[in-house]
Amino acid sequence: MNDDAPITTEPLFGGIEAGGTKFVCVVGTGPDDVRAQTRIDTTSPRPTIDQAIRFFREVHASGVAVAAMGIASFGPVELRRSEATYGFITQTPKPHWSDTDMVGPFAAALEVPIGFDTDVNAAALAEWRWGATRGLGTFVYITVGTGIGGGVVANGGTIHGMVHPEMGHVLVPRQEGDTYKGGCPYHGNCLEGMASGVAISERWGRPAEELEGRTLTKAVEMEAGYLASGLRNIVYSVAPERIVLGGGVAAMPGLIPRLREKLIERLNGYPGLPEHNSDDFVVPAQLGSGAGSAGSIALAEIALLHDRARH
Image (tube, rainbow, N blue to C red; front, top):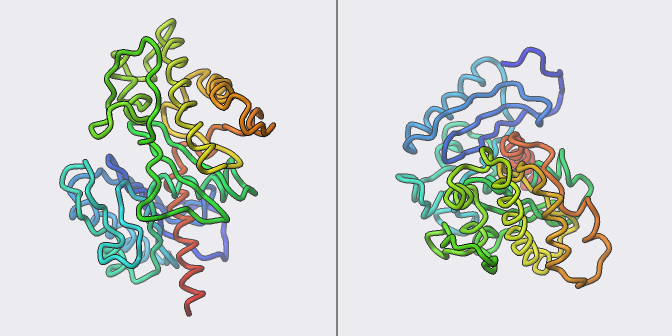
């Protein structure tokens, strides 16, 4: 427990950033008010979920009650409430996690409203609530790490359709001189296949954070080019007011300024909006590695509001 956390009369929320490597469980009201937190290694589903439930039960036993829960999960996930498998991780490449019910066990154990969305959608909500996109109506959050994912927020809510957006799998043209075959097992040279952390490691023989000198310069130039091609698709299909870039690869030195320049080249003057030339059109995430857990709290807030509206 965090004894230095500010005292508040607001409802407290539980949140889980459910990642393929770790579950981060938090209790609080936002990124600056975390009352309790733990990290659980992601092993097989039942033990991992049971440990998370135990954490929240122990917090409750200490006298700290949460009003709602949010789960920000790796995917793909089922977000359609009309489906029997709502709240499930579906066909994921993560071994043993396909067809895993994420919402059901927590709803049964904790008996509070539960919000559920992808980890990247939750991070987008966190940036809108506390970070780089406060006050905007429509924006896109892109995370560039081991893979590439994207979330869209419009009018205060994340966009879902038959499935959540899969922006990492838009196709991008191969850059001249790049002989890398592409790292996506489904599409080869999609954005994720050409610009993810895995692609960088395989292309250059080292992960992004270990590159230096001329190799780093070349890698940044190529990465900026591929990301600009991917963002061009997003600019034309979503028309966001801002694009936020998160994930470890986004921290490559000089990447975001070069990406801005490349994106302007790719747009080639169309549709001619001055905002696209601004330094605050493509920006780094403000919440950093805490965006996912903060986003889970945002999901819990929304779940509580919806539950109160229904009753």
